[in-house]
Image (cartoon, rainbow, N blue to C red):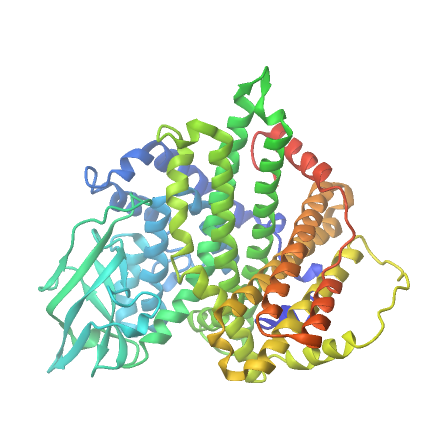
Length: 588
């Protein structure tokens, strides 16, 4: 399945990868990460947050985790890494998401710090830097954002001028993760005023200085500083990639960054649920544990349902990328080239996951604080720190607003280039609206017939709204941000609901329906709620551009395409919560 094709094509359950299929090696990596985080991170979490008092703690921990091979998991063996597949990298990312601000340091080092060299560096640069980056001997940072260029990264003002055998850099960067201890900086600057270009800059280069540590709302254990460049002279060979092609480095690396952010926050969701469930079982009010109250059960269940759905979507995309990597390698591409192109192919899905995961984590941790009540507001308890740390994820790797518009924009671009035929089914749906709907009962086939039919119809609602908006605005659609945001919410909900259904169906195929009883309830509950949101988002989008008979007809269509047989979601959530309360953790 091509990137974005989920909107017009059904994926079979047996073709998706689910966490229940993790192999022995992947489970070993998971266990190793869990052991490290439980032994080294959580006992020292308060010290890590006080980095000015303990400046060597995070760098030393990075070296320790590097000794275990986890910094170089995705780096090829020829450069001292372990060369694991993308699904295994996803497992590691998920577990590192439970490490709070230390996980941010790891992600910045292994992702935006290391990958630009792995993907775009010369052979000499790879040989020189990658082995030490994989071991943790060198720590990396990524310098993109400037005071006047946030989401508009290409508007950077930092300049690079070629002077004989050296580039001379002048400018400043801000919000630079790992800046305080990094040995290596990936820096973007303008050549000749308008050629956005990447460079590799070593820490001890004269003229490179740092601002003070930023006093942040959260992720206090993550070093964040400004980086200043005053006549910084670096060798001519430290050019990264091609002059004027820095956007390829920045944006392609961000595709993988968005995916891995979702994997990490998914781990954070599970950790928060474990903590909240344990507290709900221990905390007694009115003569019983608060976990026995319906309102608390609802919260625990919804936390689990959103996490399960996010989990399902994440591993679905991980496997799509894994399969694409293998396909491209067979065509003769190196593993690095294949990985880069595979992530680019699924840029729509990566943008979806970034929004989905970061907002799921915010919801889950907010509810965890509520379950803790007044104690949740105290820094003596872990959820206060998790609450603060979670907020950055809706800003990291491109704001959620940017990613919403990116997801729909990329779908439309693929359609315009002929890579996805979106307009043909969109036109057919408009014709379908003019027909009298059939209410004949169709013979059901399989445990999820009704759910898959509902998803198929929900995709029609998206195509109806998106197709009509594209016809009206043509190339100007990208300026209609409110409409794009509503369309994006429809796409995110449908992709996620479908992922949960496919995962559960595969679990049934593997181990029988009895083994997935609660997953069935979670999937149906998520779908039921998602369809209500799809209807609302579709209505808002259509009302933004249609009027008269067209508006009335399209609203009827969106309502028709988002119907789903109601069922008892209260009982479903109670059953889901009861299992969690019994297990005293997230058990799904």
